[in-house]
Picture 1 (cartoon, helix red, strand yellow):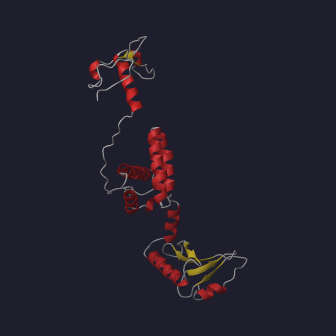
Picture 2: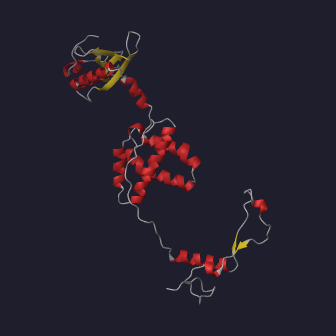
Length: 275
């Protein structure tokens, strides 16, 4: 492979032909510029993947002409050839990487193959929200096997104002990568969420509003008087052993209701609690 030293002036003088051709560099054996019939040009390097004449010839595309200078492309070619000399196959590795899904693609597969068919609808909706709203916008374009603990840690830190949500991101990422390892999508031990310290979460507490208190009181009053109706689930194996009652209702004792309930309250006035 002989030619001339590839420089900017050389590139400016190249003209496309009706067929594709490669201009080889005289300084670095295996380095050249591929010129397509359309006029598109790219820096390439060719090498034998293995020893002996029977080893297959591989071609590695470095970059499109115009993206980097000829000098930088030549340096990249030297580094690639040096890697080949140590037994590596850069073109083969690049091809393998192209087959690895992005984090966004992994998330879709995780939902379709694992979460949706194996988890309750509410749980699946929660996972989908974390993935679609938080994970994909932040790191969705990253190759799944290239996602780092640093990237996940930055996302976790960005959610410090909502500790519960931040910690759920770590849980979802951990679950997704456990699935990816089992499916052979990424290598064993790939755990980009491992080792990231979780935030301390405040106790989640909510007070009932007036309408909810009223409905709760009505339900308790019904349970104390006429009882709460219930039905038999005939699909359960023990259902046939239950007594055949015409009116199935469960009553609770008065002592089971709120201890501070106002004893002066009548059932027609609605539920009241002493202040």
